[in-house]
Image (cartoon, rainbow, N blue to C red; front, side, top):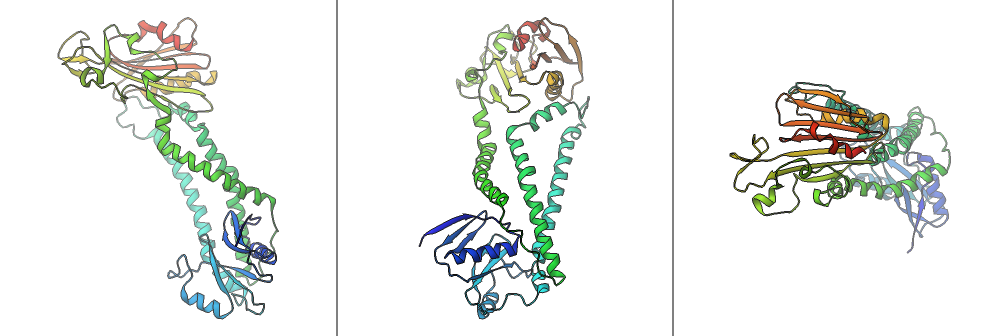
Length: 417
């Protein structure tokens, strides 16, 4: 027995249209075995077969399959159960032209749609609540959690939020929601509401608008996009870090190395203390993706002075000796963005790098072949920050160590030359 697959040209909430379409397929010798974005048929259909979609009832005892009582009642009337259609209907069929309809009148048929109509209303409201919560969470990320911040500025990181929102994967999901999911949901809700309201008033359901090429295209898109979204979801959950992050020594894009900045011999912690030169979370590079910043990456470095046997500490006051090993660190973020966004993004990244329990002083410097240079120092060293920009190129640094970033502007400015 062969299986034939067809794209459904009706909304699953267009009950009269879908039932009529199934009956037309039966006239061609096809019997349905699955309904969703597409329909699967077997070549055992009998012309004249009638199909009826029976919505899930309100009774709590009726789950994802019809009860034995319902099956016996319908069978006695000449109707047989085919299969479940999603979480909306049970599909029944009959080859007996004398078999009575499943519902004795329009009002009782309308009452059978109560649960489905309420479900659609709940789905709409819950979606509005979800979008509201997302908006609240976005504001919370900007304004809350600042109770320990001595220089709070909730709007300082808005340019970074803009860059994150222009992530291609996020925009793909957003576009699919706005231009695909929402219009379908709105049409299905209106279709079901029109049928439900007419039946509850004792009137016949509105006539079906007929097969739709647009619905066919939507169902084809669902079949194509579903595996793509699955791959993207797996990428975000599992593969994102592995694909975009790696050890600094294998990173090929330009960055300022701590070895260039420091005057003392340095080495990674693993080499000095463990003789293990594998990937360290303290010396990694990671790429980001944004349509507003096609080139965007971060490099984090933590090294130690070559003084074996000493205790490691970033805050050692003496790079040449003492109880603790001198351990400088350098974080750098590079952006290639729109020139108009360069300086706002630089300030936003500096605010992101800022240690919130320190009060920072900012000053701007002039440097050849740059549009801006911003230096930031707290009341207590060893932390420092710097940002340099030219055109749409921006490099932002956060450093902990004995050197002064202001004395190395020639090295930092090479990142945007």
